[in-house]
Length: 404
Image 1 (tube, rainbow, N blue to C red):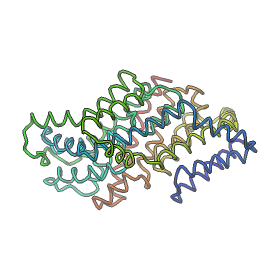
Image 2 (cartoon, one colour):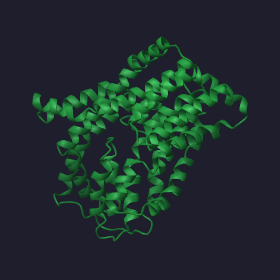
Image 3 (tube, rainbow, N blue to C red):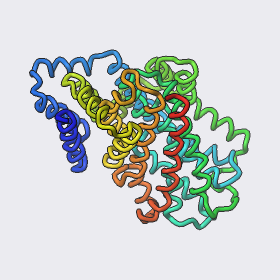
Image 4 (cartoon, rainbow, N blue to C red):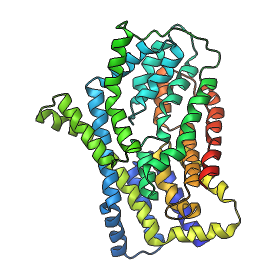
């Protein structure tokens, strides 16, 4: 019981600090210190754990992957590749509904906090002849932007799950696939309710052949990375590093331009955020809090499925960040999911539940930016959002049944 109270105290402080808009990396470092103090951890032992968290091969791999993700996003955005990708897609799809769904989905293939704003004007243009209410356009843009976060190894959440649980990306992608498929399926019913077929309006009339060539060319860097990592099991650092070098060479970046790109791309705040989470996870291990919490819940009689569902959902709802709910709750839940490595089915349930909380979070940046762009009423957006999100979460029954 003492371990549970200490851990819940730290969790409550972390959530309280996040609600006060304090930087997540700082919050996780503070949580690590508080946890070490509650367990009276000797300073040298704590510092040794910090070093292990930052210098382990898994931590270094995850950090390098995140760096290359940021660099790739910057290159594709600043060279206009992302914009050409979406414009060419408008020439290829005959129905405005397909264009409205595909635009945020395409932009969502790479993680970018501003991606929702980038695709929102295109959703607005594609829906110009349809007279849709603002909350419906906001729902379409927000919903389809987040297909890939369940399955793409380019997203920090998946990267962190793989690093914490020591499970290959490919297996996590396979287990989470029902969520991504459910997003597409239920979106067709709930996002486009009351909308009939309508011609797309965003294209420039360049011809379908040329549009197809443009689309394939612009999407090639993203698809190459995904194929190398998911199908051929190439190390993400090698795959993304190679594609990044090819992008620099293909766009003829001069050395000075490369340095400018690196300065613009690499966010120290994002890196420190990951460092803070890894330190928190290692501190949980060093203090023995994980074993204590696991023993308590094992003897509590509470259903494991209930615990694994509720805790990540609440963390996601309160923080609005995938990387936050993973970093805060997965180290605590891993012993309940079968240890190291955990059950893949229960891991997928925890991720799906946590991301459902992220999607419904009022502090989720994409939701806030989308609502502001369309001037939508948040209550109406939530009215459209919560039922399909609950149905997507229900897809967790598939990986739980297959992999548990």
